[in-house]
Image (cartoon, rainbow, N blue to C red; front, side):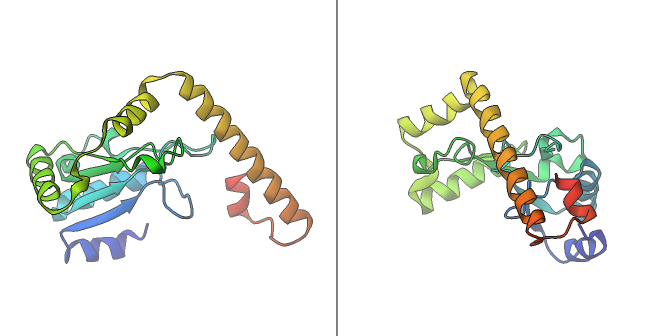
Length: 177
């Protein structure tokens, strides 16, 4: 993150959107980067909307740091958006969720969503699918196997591209593999 530019922008704006992990490149923000982001958000009273929908699908050599895992004065200025639609390929369920420690914000958001669009509620089947994703421990085994397969496919692709000299073996690439 470019914190000099971000600090300038935070002085001019009251909200920001964070993709964590970043979409589409999959970059995992370091713990120190997110701590600095929260520090600046507290300093300039900026609300952070954190899209963490890809949180479950990260490489085994990195760790996702949810914004809610930080002890920060800015924690009440955070809305985390997520779903299991990416994790378990449940896009057809058309369900996600927003989490915040700021109860007033959640109440206002629900009120606005309820009066403006029909997506402020969900159907029973979609809710059961999401809950099952979290509570059924067999799903964790499936997810671990899925992530292993993704990593194997990634390494195969990178090695083939290196062999064909279609990419260079840069320090940035070595950090990813």
